[in-house]
Structure formats: structure tokens, C-alpha cells
Length: 76
Image 1 (tube, helix red, strand yellow):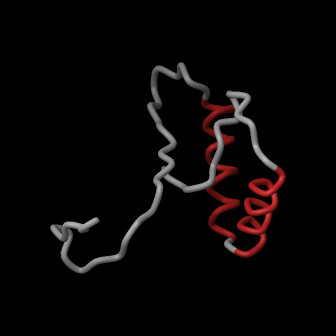
Image 2 (spheres, helix red, strand yellow):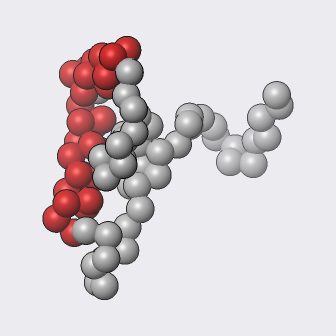
Image 3 (tube, rainbow, N blue to C red):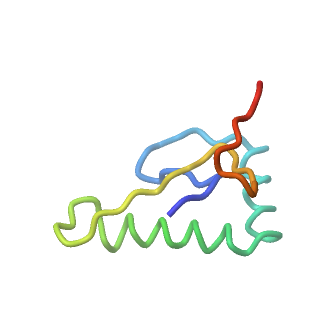
């Protein structure tokens, strides 16, 4: 699974008030974001990190682009 803005709650990552407000707005305005956070929490707490049957990772991408050509190189 992947989602931007999802924190690893197993770590004590510092979260500023501004970031907390933005994440709260994301949860209200973009329902899939809240679903992604709940799914990550379920994997973390219910499945755990040492399950021998299920291997999983939460990927937190910086940004995604919608392109017809997957070979497009971004110039920076």
C-alpha cells in the first residue's frame, strides 16, 4: 500500500501543529487518505511486523504524476 502523509506510529516522529492540521483536513476532504491510514494501522497493529504468512510495507511517496507514457523523464 502507499500513501503520502501517513506517519509511522511505531516511531515517535515529531508532528508540528501545522502538519497535524493538514493531515486532519486531508482526512476530511480526501476520504481515501483516512482509509489508507486505517489500513496501515491495521497492518501495524493486527498483522504485526513479524507475521510469517503476510509480508507488507507501507510506502510513503513524495508525489505521483499521471502520464500516458510511463517512460516520461522529468526534467529538473
